[in-house]
Length: 489
Image (cartoon, rainbow, N blue to C red; front, side, top):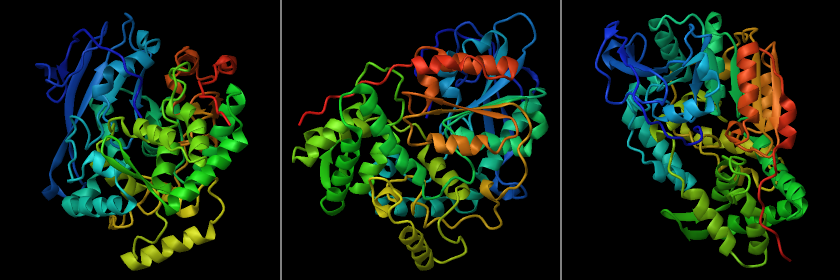
């Protein structure tokens, strides 16, 4: 997920750092009001030891701080995905880090395969993957793998963070402050493990660990918890009833899917409902508390659907499928399938993989909140059996297989307590992996809490970056509950 939208209106100074001399501004170099911006590229091998596979030019844009003194530090943000570019979100990054930009630089790098860093195209359309059935998603993954062939080995979290460090070295920056959001919280700890001496501190928001539950059961539990919390805080509905309504609708859709004419035709199955509820509906919650959101509409839509009126459910589906894709979907597929822990052996043939996957589901029945095991795992775009046709990389070590300890730097981990994509449980799990981490749960916010409008969270972040200490967290208790449509009986 990206930063909240903002506008950038003035040009900055640009330096081409490949040559080390001033150069014309690349056409893609962003402009940020009140700040010089330095842009360039660094050439990197696509796959180490495979010169025949070519190189990738990794683009960067350094937003210079506005103060007259040398920079107190350099923030290195990543907005998630995988597959979300960074440079095109320069204005949003500047807005979220506005306070820090008075004395800190902000280094934006498009991860390889995104934006200006060789945007990946493996022949899969974003809507095709986002809105398709599970069978269509599995086939798309297989098609992507065939299109990439050996080049797929070049798109991993480890390769991406090594690119980041190459840019850091080229610019002569001693240490950076990684600021990971969503997948960025998975990516930046890889940077910390591979380049520990180059990390001054870390901010991880909307977080999850490398060894997160591959069945994503905490996410299913977080859906029920989010419904209970918004009902309790708004007094517009009963939380337990909302969860039971969700269970009833999911059970009905398991047998009788509902066609919905949304951005494109969507077949609302139990799995698609799970995807829309835990991913789309809990994203950006709290960014505008008074505005009605899909999550705020959900309890009433579910209650009406149980009574035979699907109009609210259809409207919910349209709202949650109308947002444009933020990720480069090819890179999303490739990194997720290369790096996330599978529910089968990568060495097994497809029929054996399917058997192993089904065995894992059979062993986990009853642990998915309001959903069935097959329904909830089928709703995970980057989990369940989505990657079952992905061949994998011979000898590749996934992040969850790396035992290198995390560095003992100060770490701030933030989660929104309405977030079901990266729920509190996952953030706490990640925080426990660092010797000096502080976890903060932010009420009435979803994925991610940085977007809340009062400045409470960005203030906590700025104070932490400057001091290495977490202070001023009392303000989170004052964040207002989100708007929720009243449920009528």
